[in-house]
Length: 106
Image (cartoon, rainbow, N blue to C red; front, top):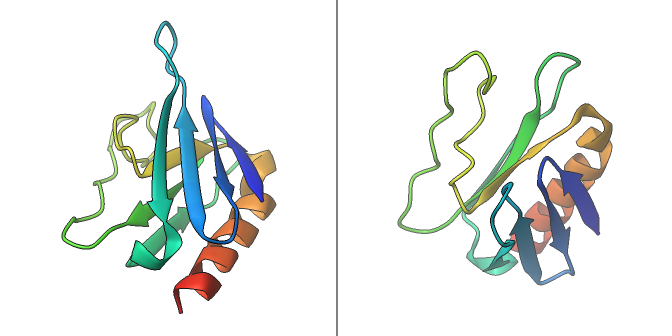
């Protein structure tokens, strides 16, 4: 299961969540999270005006706060390794991925 995001993607194989991010001018970074370790998920669907995001919360860490700038549109910072911004066209795939992770967790 894959979700194409803004400058990256998230894949879920039933056990592991893999977040790949590629910032302009830098090498791609990959973060792997075991779904059983996730304590919460946050999903904000994208609208026609703003990108949305997927975020995974891990034990002992607070969710990254949403930026309040005009260009950010209420998303966590790009530097947050446990979240990814998504376009409106990815809303359905993102909702399915969150549901699959939640089902695996519980």
